Image (cartoon, rainbow, N blue to C red; front, side):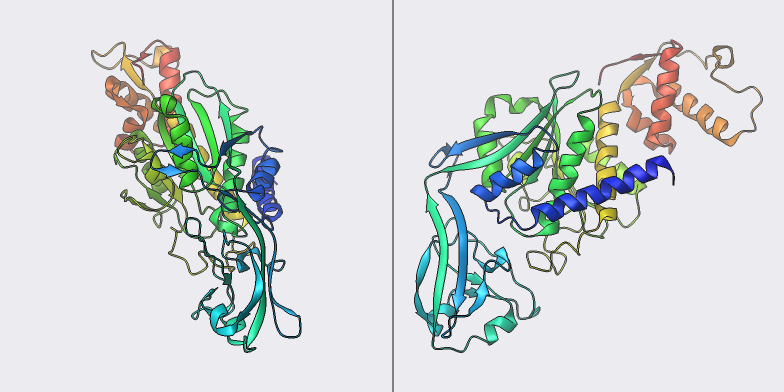
Length: 434
């Protein structure tokens, strides 16, 4: 087996194994589940873990009270647990207030959530900002609840604490930053977003071993409130963020979808569209809209950052979304590996994209005497590289980037990048900034 293929397959398996390890943990927007998840991710990359106290004002929001849970069940008249949190942490309405009492079947039904169209699936539901309690059950379980009363217990706490998030910074040649964000708040949902956590942590590990032009900031944050809190706490340095990607839903077998930044035609938008087109015609690019994941916070008008969202099948567009069917069988090592490869290619092009100026712009310079041109010809690869040299020289006026040249010449970016490097070494190109 080819060494690179073996390494790649190993990475896919490692990411799936990490998702498997994280799967049982009950996470929410706050609490010990987030801390345990970040602790495990810290075995891969040296995460800095931050705590923001309950009640902290973050723009129009307040950091909520911290939620933790140890047990929950519904017992029938014979004392049997007919619904048990230990079997699936999706069984509890996330952020449920504590309760332990007998309730009538009529009252219990007011607090049950189920899916009639998928009778064996448990839905995922939350009540972050409205105090309530509830259970999520399969429709088949719901139909079997016939006793007049049930013992209901949710052993949770909702009290002052903090919001927890993880951050990892990789300094580059310049202070300008690329932001990569993944949400860390969902419980046992494999695609949403354990696959994202695994891909992003693996990506961070790779970039930490490279020499990068940009600095890279990786955030593992609770959805919505985490991004809002981070932006509020770091407002004075947000101007350093030049580009970003929100990573989600990266383990399913569907094609990729890139959601443009609010600005719509930034360098990261163009690179993502270029890379996705290379990786398959089923991949698609959609315009920004103010709903979804944390790109809507980073792209809010007061910040308007060049941050897009790259996923596979978009949220809500696959049946398993926010249900117990989003399990470890739904995500695959192959899909996660491909997601990693696409993210890495986008970031590599972003890091290497440059503008150049032709130092000998009057007519075509003689490439042969500089060892850049094959006088014999006949070799297809050599001919392709010769054309890359000529395209690069012709468009190196300081107004076209290497990506522009690659797209206009219909040549792979890596070939244009190599051509520019050879031309710069020979003195025929000089950098013109970014």
